[in-house]
Image 1: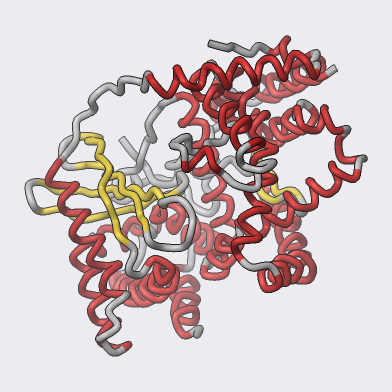
Image 2 (image 1 turned 180 degrees about the horizontal axis):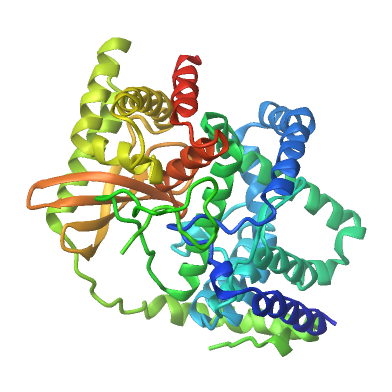
Length: 267
Length: 219
Protein backbone atom coordinates (compact mmCIF):
# COMPACT_ATOMS: atom_id res chain seq x y z
CA UNK A 1 0.00 0.00 0.00
CA UNK A 2 2.61 2.52 1.07
CA UNK A 3 4.86 1.24 -1.70
CA UNK A 4 2.17 1.87 -4.30
CA UNK A 5 1.69 5.39 -3.02
CA UNK A 6 5.42 5.91 -3.11
CA UNK A 7 5.57 4.74 -6.71
CA UNK A 8 2.59 6.90 -7.63
CA UNK A 9 4.16 9.94 -6.01
CA UNK A 10 7.45 9.31 -7.80
CA UNK A 11 5.61 9.03 -11.11
CA UNK A 12 3.68 12.20 -10.36
CA UNK A 13 6.91 14.00 -9.53
CA UNK A 14 8.45 12.87 -12.80
CA UNK A 15 5.55 13.81 -15.06
CA UNK A 16 5.42 17.57 -14.48
CA UNK A 17 9.21 17.72 -14.36
CA UNK A 18 9.42 16.13 -17.77
CA UNK A 19 6.67 18.30 -19.17
CA UNK A 20 8.28 21.58 -18.19
CA UNK A 21 10.84 23.15 -20.42
CA UNK A 22 14.34 23.07 -19.00
CA UNK A 23 14.60 26.85 -18.84
CA UNK A 24 11.34 27.08 -16.97
CA UNK A 25 12.38 24.60 -14.34
CA UNK A 26 14.87 27.01 -12.82
CA UNK A 27 15.61 25.06 -9.69
CA UNK A 28 14.82 27.49 -6.91
CA UNK A 29 18.47 28.07 -6.23
CA UNK A 30 19.75 30.61 -3.75
CA UNK A 31 20.95 32.89 -6.49
CA UNK A 32 17.94 32.56 -8.74
CA UNK A 33 14.54 34.09 -8.46
CA UNK A 34 12.20 31.36 -7.20
CA UNK A 35 10.06 29.75 -9.89
CA UNK A 36 6.61 31.05 -9.03
CA UNK A 37 4.27 30.86 -12.04
CA UNK A 38 1.24 30.92 -9.71
CA UNK A 39 2.37 34.11 -7.98
CA UNK A 40 -0.95 35.91 -8.32
CA UNK A 41 -2.93 33.04 -6.76
CA UNK A 42 -0.20 32.37 -4.22
CA UNK A 43 -0.25 36.00 -3.10
CA UNK A 44 -4.01 35.71 -2.59
CA UNK A 45 -3.61 32.58 -0.47
CA UNK A 46 -0.74 34.21 1.41
CA UNK A 47 -2.93 37.20 2.30
CA UNK A 48 -5.74 34.91 3.43
CA UNK A 49 -3.40 32.71 5.48
CA UNK A 50 -1.79 35.67 7.22
CA UNK A 51 -5.25 37.04 8.05
CA UNK A 52 -6.19 33.66 9.50
CA UNK A 53 -2.95 33.59 11.43
CA UNK A 54 -3.54 37.03 12.95
CA UNK A 55 -7.12 36.16 13.87
CA UNK A 56 -6.78 32.58 15.10
CA UNK A 57 -3.42 30.80 15.01
CA UNK A 58 -1.21 33.54 16.40
CA UNK A 59 -3.50 34.19 19.43
CA UNK A 60 -3.59 30.45 20.18
CA UNK A 61 0.20 30.17 19.90
CA UNK A 62 0.81 33.26 22.04
CA UNK A 63 -1.76 32.12 24.60
CA UNK A 64 0.09 28.82 24.83
CA UNK A 65 3.44 30.61 25.11
CA UNK A 66 2.05 32.79 27.92
CA UNK A 67 0.39 29.90 29.78
CA UNK A 68 3.02 27.19 29.42
CA UNK A 69 6.51 27.94 30.73
CA UNK A 70 9.40 27.36 28.36
CA UNK A 71 10.64 24.14 30.04
CA UNK A 72 7.17 22.61 29.57
CA UNK A 73 6.99 23.75 25.91
CA UNK A 74 10.43 22.22 25.36
CA UNK A 75 9.06 18.86 26.57
CA UNK A 76 6.23 19.13 24.04
CA UNK A 77 8.72 19.98 21.26
CA UNK A 78 10.94 17.05 22.21
CA UNK A 79 7.96 14.66 22.38
CA UNK A 80 6.58 15.46 18.91
CA UNK A 81 10.08 15.61 17.42
CA UNK A 82 10.91 12.16 18.75
CA UNK A 83 7.87 10.71 16.97
CA UNK A 84 9.28 12.02 13.68
CA UNK A 85 12.59 10.15 14.07
CA UNK A 86 11.39 6.85 12.48
CA UNK A 87 10.46 8.84 9.35
CA UNK A 88 13.95 10.34 9.43
CA UNK A 89 15.43 6.83 9.60
CA UNK A 90 13.48 5.79 6.49
CA UNK A 91 14.53 8.84 4.48
CA UNK A 92 18.16 8.61 5.59
CA UNK A 93 18.07 5.02 4.37
CA UNK A 94 16.43 5.94 1.06
CA UNK A 95 19.07 8.62 0.56
CA UNK A 96 21.83 6.07 1.03
CA UNK A 97 23.06 7.43 4.36
CA UNK A 98 23.19 4.38 6.64
CA UNK A 99 25.30 6.24 9.20
CA UNK A 100 22.70 8.98 9.55
CA UNK A 101 19.90 6.39 9.64
CA UNK A 102 21.74 4.65 12.45
CA UNK A 103 22.07 7.88 14.40
CA UNK A 104 18.36 8.73 14.02
CA UNK A 105 17.35 5.19 15.03
CA UNK A 106 19.68 5.30 18.00
CA UNK A 107 18.21 8.63 19.05
CA UNK A 108 14.69 7.21 18.79
CA UNK A 109 15.53 4.15 20.89
CA UNK A 110 17.42 6.14 23.53
CA UNK A 111 14.97 9.02 23.79
CA UNK A 112 11.87 6.78 23.79
CA UNK A 113 13.26 4.78 26.72
CA UNK A 114 15.78 6.67 28.84
CA UNK A 115 14.29 9.94 27.59
CA UNK A 116 10.84 9.01 28.92
CA UNK A 117 8.85 8.59 25.68
CA UNK A 118 10.81 11.35 24.02
CA UNK A 119 10.15 14.06 26.60
CA UNK A 120 13.89 14.53 27.08
CA UNK A 121 16.52 14.57 24.35
CA UNK A 122 19.08 12.51 26.24
CA UNK A 123 20.64 11.41 22.95
CA UNK A 124 21.80 14.96 22.13
CA UNK A 125 23.41 15.17 25.55
CA UNK A 126 25.10 11.83 24.85
CA UNK A 127 26.65 13.32 21.72
CA UNK A 128 24.12 12.25 19.06
CA UNK A 129 22.64 15.53 17.82
CA UNK A 130 19.35 15.61 15.92
CA UNK A 131 19.14 15.96 12.16
CA UNK A 132 16.15 16.06 9.86
CA UNK A 133 15.35 14.07 6.75
CA UNK A 134 12.16 14.12 4.73
CA UNK A 135 10.89 12.72 1.45
CA UNK A 136 11.06 16.05 -0.37
CA UNK A 137 14.77 16.04 0.47
CA UNK A 138 15.02 12.44 -0.70
CA UNK A 139 13.49 13.41 -4.07
CA UNK A 140 15.92 16.34 -4.30
CA UNK A 141 18.79 14.00 -3.47
CA UNK A 142 18.00 12.05 -6.65
CA UNK A 143 17.74 15.12 -8.83
CA UNK A 144 14.04 16.01 -8.76
CA UNK A 145 13.63 19.72 -9.33
CA UNK A 146 11.68 21.80 -6.84
CA UNK A 147 9.02 22.74 -9.39
CA UNK A 148 6.66 25.66 -8.90
CA UNK A 149 6.43 27.45 -5.57
CA UNK A 150 3.12 27.02 -3.79
CA UNK A 151 1.60 28.83 -0.84
CA UNK A 152 -0.83 26.45 0.81
CA UNK A 153 -3.46 27.74 3.26
CA UNK A 154 -2.40 27.20 6.89
CA UNK A 155 0.45 24.84 5.92
CA UNK A 156 2.41 27.70 4.40
CA UNK A 157 5.17 27.77 1.80
CA UNK A 158 5.91 24.63 -0.23
CA UNK A 159 7.04 23.70 -3.67
CA UNK A 160 5.66 20.86 -5.76
CA UNK A 161 8.45 18.45 -4.80
CA UNK A 162 8.13 19.14 -1.08
CA UNK A 163 4.34 19.04 -1.21
CA UNK A 164 4.54 15.52 -2.66
CA UNK A 165 7.20 14.75 -0.10
CA UNK A 166 4.88 15.79 2.72
CA UNK A 167 2.14 13.50 1.41
CA UNK A 168 4.51 10.54 1.18
CA UNK A 169 6.00 11.25 4.61
CA UNK A 170 2.48 11.37 6.08
CA UNK A 171 1.23 8.11 4.57
CA UNK A 172 4.46 6.20 5.26
CA UNK A 173 5.03 7.55 8.76
CA UNK A 174 5.84 4.46 10.89
CA UNK A 175 4.40 5.97 14.06
CA UNK A 176 1.05 6.65 12.33
CA UNK A 177 1.05 3.15 10.84
CA UNK A 178 1.57 1.68 14.31
CA UNK A 179 -0.93 3.85 16.14
CA UNK A 180 -3.69 4.17 13.56
CA UNK A 181 -3.26 7.67 12.13
CA UNK A 182 -5.08 10.93 12.70
CA UNK A 183 -8.43 9.19 13.31
CA UNK A 184 -7.28 8.02 16.72
CA UNK A 185 -7.14 10.18 19.84
CA UNK A 186 -3.38 9.78 19.88
CA UNK A 187 -3.05 10.71 16.21
CA UNK A 188 -5.28 13.77 16.56
CA UNK A 189 -3.44 14.94 19.67
CA UNK A 190 -0.09 14.44 18.01
CA UNK A 191 -1.19 16.40 14.92
CA UNK A 192 -2.55 19.23 17.07
CA UNK A 193 0.58 19.43 19.20
CA UNK A 194 2.73 19.31 16.10
CA UNK A 195 0.85 22.23 14.54
CA UNK A 196 1.03 24.25 17.75
CA UNK A 197 4.73 23.52 18.22
CA UNK A 198 5.50 24.43 14.60
CA UNK A 199 3.70 27.78 14.94
CA UNK A 200 5.62 28.57 18.15
CA UNK A 201 8.94 27.54 16.61
CA UNK A 202 8.35 29.80 13.61
CA UNK A 203 7.15 32.79 15.63
CA UNK A 204 10.47 34.56 15.08
CA UNK A 205 10.10 34.12 11.33
CA UNK A 206 6.58 35.58 11.46
CA UNK A 207 7.97 38.62 13.31
CA UNK A 208 10.81 38.97 10.79
CA UNK A 209 8.24 39.10 7.97
CA UNK A 210 6.74 42.20 9.58
CA UNK A 211 10.02 44.03 8.84
CA UNK A 212 10.01 43.09 5.17
CA UNK A 213 8.93 45.55 2.48
CA UNK A 214 7.37 42.63 0.55
CA UNK A 215 6.64 39.89 3.11
CA UNK A 216 5.41 37.46 0.43
CA UNK A 217 8.66 37.70 -1.57
CA UNK A 218 10.70 37.45 1.64
CA UNK A 219 8.93 34.27 2.82
CA UNK A 220 9.33 32.77 -0.66
CA UNK A 221 13.03 33.60 -0.77
CA UNK A 222 13.74 32.24 2.71
CA UNK A 223 11.76 29.05 2.09
CA UNK A 224 13.35 28.25 -1.26
CA UNK A 225 16.86 28.92 0.05
CA UNK A 226 16.19 26.76 3.10
CA UNK A 227 14.98 23.85 0.96
CA UNK A 228 17.97 24.12 -1.38
CA UNK A 229 20.15 23.93 1.73
CA UNK A 230 18.24 20.88 3.03
CA UNK A 231 18.74 19.06 -0.28
CA UNK A 232 22.43 20.05 -0.32
CA UNK A 233 22.79 18.44 3.10
CA UNK A 234 21.69 15.18 1.48
CA UNK A 235 23.83 15.52 -1.66
CA UNK A 236 26.89 17.13 -0.07
CA UNK A 237 26.95 19.81 -2.79
CA UNK A 238 27.96 23.38 -2.01
CA UNK A 239 25.98 26.52 -2.69
CA UNK A 240 26.35 28.53 -5.84
CA UNK A 241 26.51 32.09 -4.55
CA UNK A 242 26.05 35.43 -6.30
CA UNK A 243 28.77 37.89 -7.18
CA UNK A 244 28.91 40.90 -4.83
CA UNK A 245 31.35 42.89 -6.91
CA UNK A 246 29.11 43.83 -9.83
CA UNK A 247 25.42 44.59 -10.21
CA UNK A 248 23.48 42.15 -12.41
CA UNK A 249 24.36 42.24 -16.08
CA UNK A 250 22.82 44.86 -18.29
CA UNK A 251 19.91 43.72 -20.36
CA UNK A 252 18.27 41.89 -17.46
CA UNK A 253 14.61 42.19 -18.36
CA UNK A 254 12.69 44.29 -15.91
CA UNK A 255 9.30 44.08 -14.29
CA UNK A 256 8.98 41.21 -13.74
CA UNK A 257 11.87 39.12 -14.98
CA UNK A 258 11.01 35.64 -16.22
CA UNK A 259 12.05 32.83 -13.91
CA UNK A 260 14.74 31.82 -16.35
CA UNK A 261 16.75 34.95 -15.60
CA UNK A 262 18.15 34.61 -12.11
CA UNK A 263 18.03 37.87 -10.19
CA UNK A 264 21.66 38.47 -9.20
CA UNK A 265 23.81 37.40 -12.08
CA UNK A 266 26.79 35.29 -11.22
CA UNK A 267 29.67 33.89 -13.16
CA UNK B 1 24.82 -1.57 8.10
CA UNK B 2 21.19 -1.31 7.31
CA UNK B 3 19.95 -0.11 3.99
CA UNK B 4 16.28 0.57 3.47
CA UNK B 5 14.73 0.32 0.08
CA UNK B 6 11.36 1.41 -1.13
CA UNK B 7 10.16 -2.18 -0.89
CA UNK B 8 11.01 -2.24 2.80
CA UNK B 9 8.51 0.53 3.37
CA UNK B 10 5.81 -1.16 1.28
CA UNK B 11 4.94 -3.70 3.91
CA UNK B 12 5.83 -2.25 7.26
CA UNK B 13 5.23 -4.85 9.89
CA UNK B 14 5.57 -4.25 13.58
CA UNK B 15 8.11 -7.03 13.92
CA UNK B 16 10.17 -5.99 10.90
CA UNK B 17 10.48 -2.36 11.92
CA UNK B 18 11.17 -3.28 15.54
CA UNK B 19 13.94 -5.64 14.45
CA UNK B 20 15.39 -2.97 12.19
CA UNK B 21 15.38 -0.43 15.00
CA UNK B 22 17.04 -2.94 17.33
CA UNK B 23 19.72 -3.68 14.74
CA UNK B 24 20.32 0.00 14.21
CA UNK B 25 20.52 0.56 17.95
CA UNK B 26 23.19 -2.13 18.21
CA UNK B 27 25.07 -0.65 15.27
CA UNK B 28 25.06 2.72 17.02
CA UNK B 29 28.12 1.85 19.05
CA UNK B 30 30.04 1.06 15.87
CA UNK B 31 28.98 4.29 14.22
CA UNK B 32 30.02 6.34 17.23
CA UNK B 33 33.35 4.53 17.44
CA UNK B 34 34.25 5.15 13.80
CA UNK B 35 33.64 8.79 12.89
CA UNK B 36 33.82 9.62 9.20
CA UNK B 37 37.13 10.89 7.93
CA UNK B 38 36.47 14.31 6.41
CA UNK B 39 38.40 15.48 3.41
CA UNK B 40 40.42 18.55 4.29
CA UNK B 41 39.05 21.54 2.38
CA UNK B 42 41.23 24.66 2.31
CA UNK B 43 40.61 27.06 5.20
CA UNK B 44 41.58 30.70 5.60
CA UNK B 45 42.97 31.58 9.02
CA UNK B 46 42.93 35.34 8.33
CA UNK B 47 39.23 35.35 7.44
CA UNK B 48 38.46 33.20 10.49
CA UNK B 49 40.32 35.55 12.83
CA UNK B 50 38.56 38.55 11.35
CA UNK B 51 35.07 37.07 11.87
CA UNK B 52 35.94 35.86 15.36
CA UNK B 53 36.97 39.34 16.48
CA UNK B 54 34.66 41.64 14.49
CA UNK B 55 31.42 39.64 14.77
CA UNK B 56 31.99 39.01 18.46
CA UNK B 57 32.45 42.76 18.91
CA UNK B 58 29.02 43.50 17.42
CA UNK B 59 27.37 41.11 19.91
CA UNK B 60 29.41 42.49 22.81
CA UNK B 61 28.49 46.14 22.13
CA UNK B 62 24.80 45.25 22.43
CA UNK B 63 25.31 43.86 25.93
CA UNK B 64 27.35 46.80 27.29
CA UNK B 65 25.31 47.76 30.35
CA UNK B 66 27.62 50.65 31.29
CA UNK B 67 26.71 52.55 28.09
CA UNK B 68 23.62 54.69 27.55
CA UNK B 69 21.20 53.73 24.79
CA UNK B 70 22.66 56.46 22.55
CA UNK B 71 26.23 55.35 23.24
CA UNK B 72 25.27 51.75 22.59
CA UNK B 73 23.71 52.69 19.25
CA UNK B 74 26.85 54.60 18.25
CA UNK B 75 29.08 51.68 19.27
CA UNK B 76 26.87 49.25 17.35
CA UNK B 77 27.05 51.50 14.27
CA UNK B 78 30.85 51.56 14.47
CA UNK B 79 31.15 47.81 15.10
CA UNK B 80 28.92 47.13 12.08
CA UNK B 81 31.19 49.38 9.97
CA UNK B 82 34.19 47.30 10.97
CA UNK B 83 32.43 43.98 10.32
CA UNK B 84 30.34 44.62 7.24
CA UNK B 85 30.97 46.00 3.74
CA UNK B 86 28.04 48.41 3.86
CA UNK B 87 28.53 49.97 0.38
CA UNK B 88 28.77 46.56 -1.32
CA UNK B 89 25.63 45.27 0.40
CA UNK B 90 23.77 48.51 -0.32
CA UNK B 91 24.43 48.00 -4.03
CA UNK B 92 23.74 44.26 -3.92
CA UNK B 93 20.29 44.47 -2.32
CA UNK B 94 19.06 46.67 -5.18
CA UNK B 95 19.73 43.85 -7.67
CA UNK B 96 19.16 44.96 -11.26
CA UNK B 97 17.95 48.37 -10.07
CA UNK B 98 21.49 49.21 -8.91
CA UNK B 99 22.19 49.93 -12.60
CA UNK B 100 19.32 52.31 -13.20
CA UNK B 101 19.01 54.22 -9.91
CA UNK B 102 19.72 57.97 -10.17
CA UNK B 103 22.54 59.46 -8.05
CA UNK B 104 20.00 61.41 -5.98
CA UNK B 105 17.92 58.30 -5.31
CA UNK B 106 21.08 56.37 -4.56
CA UNK B 107 22.05 58.84 -1.85
CA UNK B 108 18.54 58.66 -0.36
CA UNK B 109 18.48 54.88 -0.51
CA UNK B 110 21.92 54.53 1.11
CA UNK B 111 20.75 56.56 4.09
CA UNK B 112 17.31 54.94 4.35
CA UNK B 113 18.67 51.39 4.03
CA UNK B 114 21.32 51.92 6.69
CA UNK B 115 18.78 53.23 9.21
CA UNK B 116 16.31 50.48 8.38
CA UNK B 117 18.91 47.69 8.58
CA UNK B 118 20.37 48.96 11.85
CA UNK B 119 16.93 49.16 13.47
CA UNK B 120 15.91 45.71 12.25
CA UNK B 121 19.16 43.94 13.11
CA UNK B 122 19.63 45.63 16.47
CA UNK B 123 16.21 44.29 17.44
CA UNK B 124 16.83 40.82 16.05
CA UNK B 125 20.31 40.51 17.55
CA UNK B 126 19.09 41.58 20.96
CA UNK B 127 18.27 37.95 21.74
CA UNK B 128 21.95 37.19 21.17
CA UNK B 129 23.52 40.13 23.01
CA UNK B 130 26.32 38.83 25.20
CA UNK B 131 26.35 35.52 23.32
CA UNK B 132 29.74 34.12 22.45
CA UNK B 133 30.78 33.32 18.96
CA UNK B 134 33.15 30.52 18.11
CA UNK B 135 34.65 29.91 14.67
CA UNK B 136 34.39 26.21 13.82
CA UNK B 137 35.93 26.31 10.35
CA UNK B 138 35.96 27.98 6.96
CA UNK B 139 35.74 27.09 3.29
CA UNK B 140 37.64 29.02 0.63
CA UNK B 141 35.27 29.38 -2.36
CA UNK B 142 38.05 31.06 -4.31
CA UNK B 143 40.96 33.20 -3.08
CA UNK B 144 39.50 36.23 -1.32
CA UNK B 145 35.98 34.74 -1.05
CA UNK B 146 35.55 32.67 2.09
CA UNK B 147 32.65 31.19 4.08
CA UNK B 148 33.47 31.24 7.79
CA UNK B 149 31.36 28.86 9.88
CA UNK B 150 30.61 29.81 13.49
CA UNK B 151 28.49 28.71 16.41
CA UNK B 152 26.70 31.07 18.73
CA UNK B 153 26.21 30.00 22.31
CA UNK B 154 24.71 31.83 25.25
CA UNK B 155 21.72 33.21 23.32
CA UNK B 156 18.23 31.76 23.73
CA UNK B 157 18.19 28.34 25.40
CA UNK B 158 18.73 25.37 23.12
CA UNK B 159 21.55 23.99 21.02
CA UNK B 160 24.18 26.41 19.63
CA UNK B 161 23.08 28.33 16.55
CA UNK B 162 25.16 27.66 13.45
CA UNK B 163 25.83 30.90 11.54
CA UNK B 164 27.97 31.22 8.40
CA UNK B 165 29.57 34.46 7.25
CA UNK B 166 30.61 35.19 3.69
CA UNK B 167 33.72 37.39 3.78
CA UNK B 168 35.60 39.02 0.93
CA UNK B 169 39.15 40.41 1.17
CA UNK B 170 42.69 39.26 1.75
CA UNK B 171 45.45 39.20 4.36
CA UNK B 172 44.11 40.99 7.41
CA UNK B 173 41.68 43.11 5.40
CA UNK B 174 38.26 41.43 5.29
CA UNK B 175 34.60 42.44 5.31
CA UNK B 176 31.38 40.46 5.63
CA UNK B 177 28.97 40.69 2.69
CA UNK B 178 26.36 38.15 3.81
CA UNK B 179 25.40 35.86 6.69
CA UNK B 180 23.48 32.63 6.68
CA UNK B 181 21.59 30.49 9.14
CA UNK B 182 19.45 27.45 8.38
CA UNK B 183 20.43 27.87 4.75
CA UNK B 184 18.98 31.37 4.42
CA UNK B 185 21.37 34.13 3.30
CA UNK B 186 20.19 37.48 4.63
CA UNK B 187 21.49 39.75 1.82
CA UNK B 188 20.05 37.46 -0.86
CA UNK B 189 16.68 37.44 0.92
CA UNK B 190 16.85 41.23 1.33
CA UNK B 191 17.55 41.61 -2.39
CA UNK B 192 14.55 39.49 -3.37
CA UNK B 193 12.38 41.47 -0.95
CA UNK B 194 13.51 44.86 -2.32
CA UNK B 195 13.52 43.90 -6.00
CA UNK B 196 10.01 42.46 -5.69
CA UNK B 197 8.86 45.67 -3.97
CA UNK B 198 10.32 47.81 -6.77
CA UNK B 199 8.94 45.47 -9.46
CA UNK B 200 5.48 45.79 -7.97
CA UNK B 201 5.84 49.59 -7.91
CA UNK B 202 6.44 49.55 -11.66
CA UNK B 203 10.19 49.98 -11.26
CA UNK B 204 9.97 53.08 -9.04
CA UNK B 205 12.79 52.90 -6.46
CA UNK B 206 11.24 55.91 -4.70
CA UNK B 207 8.41 53.70 -3.43
CA UNK B 208 10.92 51.42 -1.68
CA UNK B 209 12.82 54.39 -0.23
CA UNK B 210 9.60 55.87 1.16
CA UNK B 211 8.63 52.54 2.69
CA UNK B 212 12.03 52.10 4.35
CA UNK B 213 11.83 55.61 5.76
CA UNK B 214 8.39 54.83 7.19
CA UNK B 215 9.55 51.49 8.63
CA UNK B 216 12.53 53.09 10.37
CA UNK B 217 10.08 55.36 12.23
CA UNK B 218 8.19 52.37 13.63
CA UNK B 219 8.81 51.74 17.33
